[in-house]
Length: 320
Ligand code: SF4
Image (cartoon, rainbow, N blue to C red; front, top):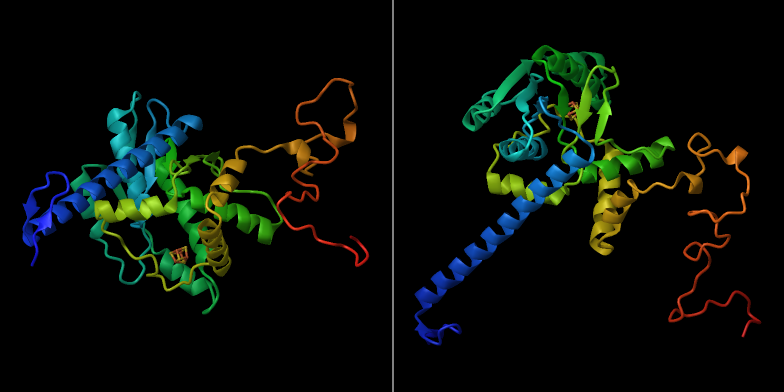
């Protein structure tokens, strides 16, 4: 076998040495990528927390941990940020053990102990309640989530938590926007910070700026002890599955489109929508002064704009 030449030194490497050098280069590349991912995740979470004033000095943040990649990542990143934050806040991790068959009850306590974080496991057999009340074959998620929500709100109050942190990420937010448009005729996403529906808690979503594929990679890198999410035997909501598939397809075919849609959620122009509750269409009058965002009669992007390089489509046979 011919020796391999190291292009950096022009010295010859034996095949075994070349393999080792390749492996070292691969390791270095992987570690650089993880380093970049770590920085991006921490920066995005820090940015979302700041932009929406999610965590304030003296807060006790109850992080809901289900055993999935998103909530593990959320807890992991918040623990790291807490150490460098200019404010003081406490974290308590909470898991709701819903008594689903096969739920490995020791996995989360062991992990949370190993992280040295305060935690509470709330045991409530919502699984039996849902099974008893929902006929076989019907989707159980809406009752299950309602029960879970009520329990978590109560636990937050009992623990003295001032914020409830959930692991929803950017792709959940965009998916929810489309679900609400497609099936609910509403332009409504998932808020990064909002008072809970019972009015007693403030819910925050610090992963709001984070992309799901980054969380998948982070969970693999950190080797979180993932608990499968199908223990209850319920199928994921079919409509959500379809919307996610649509967005994933767009993401592959039109890179940047999902990103733009997400950014658009922070750039709403009520005067160019049709919600009369958000803009006083009935009372507007011309003032004679130029108006930023005023109507430009024929918006270039919306008109039948044909790029000069595109073929002109003939509308009538006799057009030349
Ligand atoms: S998948 Fe199962 S545990 Fe999750 S919300 Fe639906 S019924 Fe509840």
